[in-house]
Amino acid sequence: MSVIDKRERDRTAAFAALLGQFPEQRCAAGAAGTIGYREAGAGEAGAQHAGRALPVVLLHGIGSGAASWVRQLDALGASRRVLAWDAPGYGVSTPVHGASPAAADYAASLNAWLEALGIERCVLVGHSLGAIIAGGLVRVMPARIAGLLLISPAGGYGSAPADTRESRRDARLAMLAELGPAGLAEQRSGNMLSGFANEEAKAWVRWNMARIVPAGYAQATHLLANADLAADLAGFRGRTAVAVGANDAITPPAACERIAAAAHVGLQVIPQAGHAGYVEAPAVYSALIDTFCRQCDPQRGAGMSEPLQQNESDHAKAEASYVVPGLERGLRILAEFSPREPVLGAPELSKRLGIPRTTVFRLLQTLESLGFLERADKDRNYKLGIAVLRLGFEYLSSLELTDLGLPVIESLRDATGFTTHIVIRDGRDVVFVAKAQSQSPVFSSIRVNVGTRLPAHATTHGHVLMGDLSLKELHALYPEGALNRMTSATPETVDALYDVIREDALRGYGVSNSSFERGISVVTAPVRNETQRIVACITVTVPRPEIDAALIADGLIDKVQRAAAELSRRLNYRSDDEHTFLKALGLR
Image 1 (cartoon, one colour):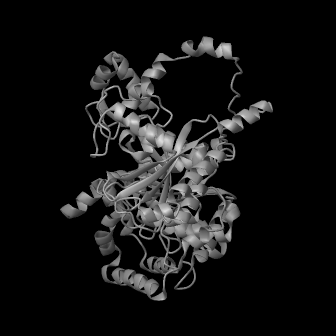
Image 2: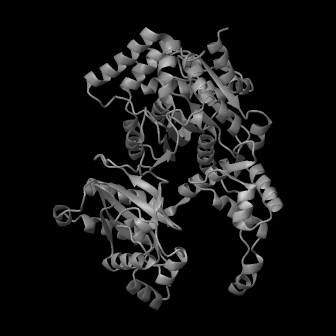
């Protein structure tokens, strides 16, 4: 064995050892022939969770196979049945009929396999080409799909001109003929991952790609050329989510925006992940899948007891006594971690929070046992764990304003031709929680996606979102007085910031003419709920140095304000006059 072969074997050893726990199985699927697959959670764990947790089915991409999902099989199998198939023509699975198949052909095999296994409904997770096959099942048998999660979906070239489809198809087939599976893996596998991937992930992607069956890969290449995923999703109204790695070079976020729009959902962008993100960042993607599955489960939340009823005096008396010091300290520890400081140790946390070091050690070990923290190295340093990610996904999914607001910002995007967002404030940051992407490119040094954070004091979004704050509240938020200047337009002091905030509040909207980034302008208007407080803002991003007279004459500002007013209405906001009228009727 050569040194290179030994090194490659060593790098895949952990994956291969884990894969041994999920041996290849075969299923006779009627007319579809044999389907090979790997499974987790079918034993005692599966029986324990039967009826409460739907099975999840994982569909791989064109250069992969069932084995690529080994980390997800391991992570998710404790709470539900997990199945990862080898698509027709991959592994031992029988190919579909015809040299140039369509998504419906693969979907028929998928449906027959699920039927043979007795799976009536499942959560379907499709990665890349697997998303196209999932879209085919949407057409063939939508009743089987309790939830549809598309990860880095390939859209297909079915809507492209014939010469484009043929050239893309023929180039991929020529590469396969020239290089073979092993050569293809050596040359193409690197494109599947981001620069953050470790050597083990790179080796596992190569291992899987080197095992493709040329005839099956050729059929899948024809499928890619023939498919139109956006068209297949257009009529589906089941629970759907679309996610992509921020560093995906094969199906980049801009391309996935189109798929998300066709599915009528926002796009979730996973930082520091490439196309095969579930291989290089398995904990993050397992959390994403687990969260989505829990949302689809038929008895989600069942069995939770009703909250105890208390009157106002009870609450007043109990407010202080209900604070749990240990819980408070644990949450304060979690709050210390940030993108700037992703790794922290007990000594530093003890010093910052004024908590004895022995107590910090116990809290860290407790948080680690629950999955909220993970060991970052051998020096007892920690980083945030998968449970925090799960809470984050749950939070974004539960936001009422994203569900109610996405149609509003999509309509605003269509009316203006510009990208639109919903933004909220989290302390001293603004957070983008929904996005409707336009066709117009935005050349920006800051990639803004769902989850992106920016400093509130330096952005028009933040100025509008802080429109309800008094000067006293603003000083409490920024006790340092002097503010970090991002550009020459950033207010330097809290008093100067307050003046800008009041100006925008009195006007009813904010305008930024390249004040945060050169060449990017925005118009932002506040969104209020039934409490009459500002809870979000709607913003339009204009890839120009300024909002010129032509845009103003075309009603851009009015359109943004009307969109914000519509979302406020959907959140049960009423003006002061309406509140007075409703109160007089005894309705408030």
